[in-house]
Image (cartoon, rainbow, N blue to C red; front, side, top):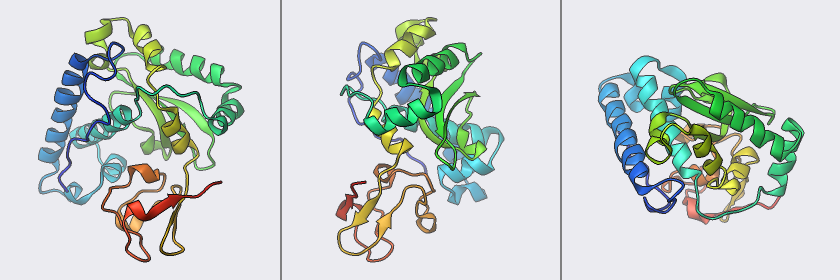
Length: 245
C-alpha cells in the first residue's frame, strides 16, 4: 500500500491570516510530504507495506511509527479546519458538558494542555469505548490510537505548525485555532452518524467500521474512501444516506 498526500479541503491561503499560505507551504507541502515519503520508503518490502495507517500506528515503533503517525496526525488536523464558522452543535455541547462541566471549561482545559505541553507534540480530545471524552497530551508523534482511544479533535503544537505566523507565541496560535475548528466534524467523530444503503438494509455504523474491507472501528463515514462499496449489495458510498437519530 503506497500512502499519498491528502487533498486539503481549502486553498493554501484560505485560512489566512490565522494560518498563512506560507505556513501551509511548509507545514503541509514540505513537512507532511516528507513524512509520507519517508513512510513509503521505510515500509517497502516489510509487512507494514500491506497495512493501513491505523494498523501501522498500533503495531510499529521507531521510524516507521513516527512517520506513519505524523502522516495520520497531520491529515486529521488539516481536515478538521475550516473557514466556515459554526457554533458547537447541541449534542456535542451536551457531551462536553457531561465530561468537562461545560464547553467553556473544556476549552480552558484543552488550551492549558496545548500551551503547557513541553516541547513538540499534539493535544487530543479522544473518546474511549464507552464514549467518555478526555484530553490526551502526546509528545512528538503520539496518537491516542495506541491507547485504544478514538481521536475526536487535535491541535498540532510542533513549532513548525505556528512559528512562521506566531514565532514563539504558542498561546496566540492556540487562541486562533479555536476560530478555525469545524465543529460539525468534531461532533460527527464524537457522536458518529450512521449511514444506510439506499438499495439494501445495510447500515454503516462508525463504531463498528468495516474491518473486512480495512475500515477501522471509529472511522466516520465521511473519511471512508470514495471507492468503498456496500458489503451486501456492492453499491458505492454515494448511495448511502445519513440516518436521522
